[in-house]
Image (cartoon, rainbow, N blue to C red):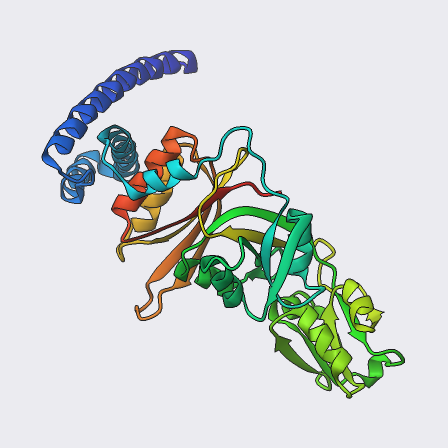
Amino acid sequence: MDLTEIRKEIDKVDDTLLKAFLRRMDLSKDVAEYKKQNNIPTLNKKREREILADVMEKSGELAPYSHRLYQTLFELSRAYQVSLSGFASNIRSTVESSIMPEDSLFPDSGSVACQGVEGAYSQMAADRMFPRGNISFFKSFEGVFNAVENGLCQYGVLPIENSSNGSVRAVYDLLRQKNVFIVRSMRLCVSHCLLVKPGVKLSDITEIHSHEQALGQCSDFLKSLGDKVKVIADPNTAMAAELVSKSPDPGIAAIASSGCAGLYGLVPLDAPIQNSENNYTRFICIGKNPQVFPGANKISLILSLEHRPGSLYEVMAEFAAREINLLKLESCPMVGHDFEFLFFFDVEASVRDPKVLNMLEYLERSCPGFTYLGNYQEV
């Protein structure tokens, strides 16, 4: 049999498979209706395991491939059943009440909370997001969250990850703990300077202050200084610059933006000093209530999953079954649990798409922990 004849046979088999698949999905529709009427959960792991065991036994050396095929069939069937279930859900009501009109624009003014002091990178990001905003500064990230959660400020702007030094875990932890939502994000190119008092030389420096993220982004430069220079993490880069300006010690320096030099009477001794020229920090804007503006194309979630093999795969398969692109997946240990994890997801999707909302409903019902952080646009 030549290749052309083989392909003709494959086409015949594929036609049979398609007809069988469509019939199977029709039956899944009937199953969904029955489960809805009898208030039965969509997922039935016992039956799936029984079918998979039977398939493996019948498939011989092709058992791994058959196993994958049937897992995919189960995932597609569940996704279809969820879309037909019509069960009321918290996430649906949250999303539907948060969708802004098609002609609405993201505000360019408002009361905005930032961590740090004048000259902080968060302030730069806030100025770009809210050109006419009224900025209030808070000492900690938690202070920003509290200001938004308690209604003191309409919005809060915080760093969440850096292209070379990873996530700002403290902000992720607070997103999990606080009742706020992401309504916007942006990327800011960050260039760090070594700031000192006028007349201070590099050889005079004995102590360098900055935020831990900035210190990590400038690790190569710091290593080049040797052990004689003490490195100290401060709550904020601009706060570090302010500390240097007020200190009587001429040997103290800060890593901060060039704008902090003029603000605090300092001099840039070396710049740029970050490890990579392509150094971007992603900032998020949080609000007390979810707001989905036109153009929102990113969804952030926090999920806790059952502690068993395949639980993460099943969630990722839900994205794949709906052709939703996964942008970020990061794990975080759950405090008080032995080697169990939370997962942070960013996906490229819009809640205006019915299949996406169906997926969120499925995740809300099937995951032990489900936190919807918002649907927003990154600029």
